[in-house]
Image (cartoon, rainbow, N blue to C red):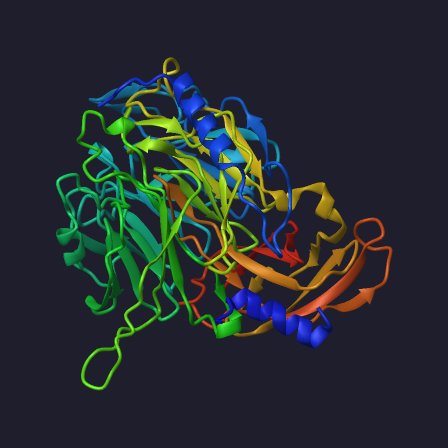
Length: 585
């Protein structure tokens, strides 16, 4: 039986070391949801998993009013979070300070903010200037930590914007380029940071069947056709926000609607077509979600698998009763580094989708890679589609997908529900402390604070079960680590822990740009780490803690880990400590 990379690592440690809007009653939606949970109950834990009853995890309200409902969220290496909504919809709940530029154009005269910087430490916000419409736009961080944000609607259709983050006390803000624009207007597109770290590829969008580069690779460069987007453009346009993942071989996995390819973006050649995923369409407006599962040193970072979960029924978006149609209840998992071999004398090794059934139906759900390598499914609805007023029956319970369990096991675990529905235009992002930052939700064209699913300005944090105090006895904390690491080179990390438990691991998580149920650029790497060596037996760090050093080998190249800032999480026996920021260069 083939073991996962993490299972291989843990086994090696044991051997070496000895171890259109319809209104639906919200009350009825919540009742139906409660009945679902009563019938299903929480998933039964399995060997090696953290056992908690009845439902693990906890919620905390961080801020009652962020001023805006965050449609797009990204966490910076200064422990702040960029919240971004859209313009041209009237005033927000937070004014621009004196001296900031109001939006004055034929469509509006607005001196309120539609973007804010959220301080993870103080749970406060600072207004930011955004001048053009960022509705349903895209983005990602460059290697130097600068956010590059592209497209939107109306006066933002071809815009390129940047924000160079700063400490929470700073005054960094959005800058809109006056010299560079997109070749094709991009609305509902996807960005992926490329291995050079200073360039992104922007794929697709509404009525746009091309990709282009930001910045351009040479003067006069335009956009390039992508046949996959033409072929998957059905009556509902179920190929917006295509899922794009950079693979260790340097190619791009691109998924739209139900089909996917491997693209050599340097030549424009499609090098592989994958089987159609069974079931429903998975992209906006029948919004499922996707993650690239953790890459591990154990196989030389050579094996990459994609997990796609949720979606909506085909035709639901244009169906007058679509808001009431059940969402998808399946996930598909595909090893995308398996090469198809065909022809005389060769066997057909075409990879196949492994389909799994979630305990809850989900559309518009976010998927977050946790420090442990598991996947959190959070937010969304159990019925309907994305769009204004097109969903019902909120999916209040997060679900944990246990990545490294055998497929025959139940890999899903139902977690403690929120009391706040987060449906269309909501976000979820991993924080350096291991919690999940949850924001947004607006199913209306304009801010609407009455009726079903009102515009949501509250900000929450969800704490997975690994943050329970019962695991503090083995929770590690990094006390020393380099600010920068270089490909393939060794570096030293020092950590403290109340007690030593095997295995000790270091996991490196990117900071993606999250919008519309998809985190663009999300990835997690399991690093090669030596056995811990004691530095001091007691008296350093936490009370009673001991200090240890490990030698770590950085990822081998930029295809595996594009140069950017990462959160470096220490792990002991499956329990993570706080991450430190580290820059891959």
